[in-house]
Each structure stands twice: as C-alpha cells, then as structure tokens.
Length: 130
Image (cartoon, rainbow, N blue to C red; front, top):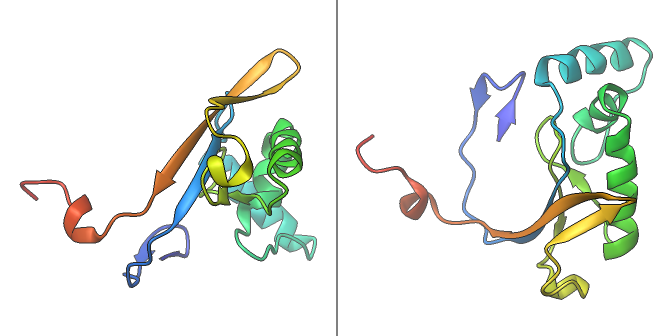
C-alpha cells in the first residue's frame, strides 16, 4: 500500500487478483494530478472509494472521464483508476466481461489497449540481483 505522496510503503499480504487493464492513448502528469487533488480538497472534494486521484486526474485530462465511462459501459463493472492515471482497471479478465480476444476499446477513431493482468507473489515478482 502506498500512502502520502508515495513516500510511505506498507507491505500487504498476497491476494491473487485478475484484472482487465485499459491503457488510454495518453498519460496523466502525476505532479499536475496531485496539484489538482490539493485544489479539490480545498473545495471540500477529492474523495473516492478506491482512489482519491480519480477526480483530480480527470480534471487534468478531461478525456479520461470519457474512457472511464466507456470502459464501465462495456464491462458493466466499477472502473478504478490505477495510481495517478491514466490506466484504468476492472476486476476480472476480458473473458469474464465478454471481451475475450478484444485487444482494444475505441472511442471514435481512437483506440486504447485492453490487457489481462494477474497479481504474483513477491517471491516470484522480485527482480534478480537486488
């Protein structure tokens, strides 16, 4: 678990999870997202069940809200922002959402990658030589 502005790390117990990632064709500047979060908090806003940076990232990159809404529509699931953006995810694989074999989601003529991901235990995921 990451707390603060990423400077405090807390190790969590391993839980196997399968998720579908949506990678929009743009990034969100992390510093700008945190500045936007400060502004939102000053307005009494900026709280989210899963990621407080959701509204802030969408303030920085308004098109992120369009991708989140479309991903939610297609999967019928709650969409969560990963980190400060722009990657979004839903619980379950593409196949779980009826998207087996679908490699991208499109809005108009613009595509965003869809990927399946699974968590791995620390022992498996640790880089060698560290």
